[in-house]
Length: 67
Length: 148
Image (cartoon, rainbow over all chains, first blue to last red; front, side, top):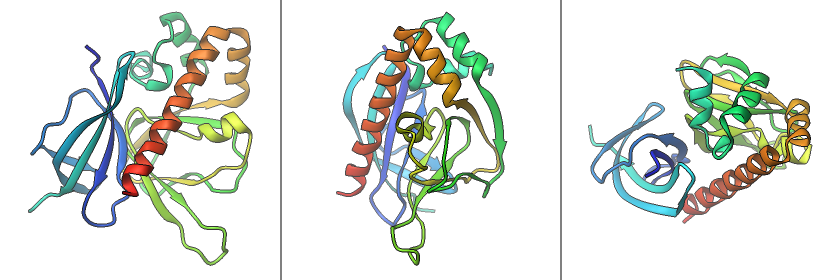
């Protein structure tokens, strides 16, 4: 099973442009994610395209975390 | 973490052999940027590909009118590449890229070195060009999702 996750993070509120980065674990709904200086909560995790080689490709929707 | 381990976890090099990975590693040059440092500038010529080892960068695009202010179109983190468009099509930089984390470390690959290696080793050239195409496709999918 591939252990690299290339993730397209899309923020559903605010005007953040989102981010693309690699992680070594699959995010779960409710997880808290830090992108730069912002903190976000995971709303949705979807396999964006089929895994290839050592990589999984995910789309993750986020909302700004409540402080 | 050593360079081979870092490069081994980069999608650009997924599928290359350990020997080929060493060839790529030998042509890499490490650079470190502080938050706010500009790495590439939209409209400038460019002949380098960048692999982000640690940190974050923001990709900024200005419109065609001189008065338009740059807008961040995406942030890129660990394992991502940028500068690949100018590497492939020899055009001017399509965006400005700026470091936004306190310490951003990148590996830089020069186009001449890269093309020489691909000419010498067609298998490696095929793998890396396929991965660059897949990366461009992923970035396009990201933009489509952001625009929904």
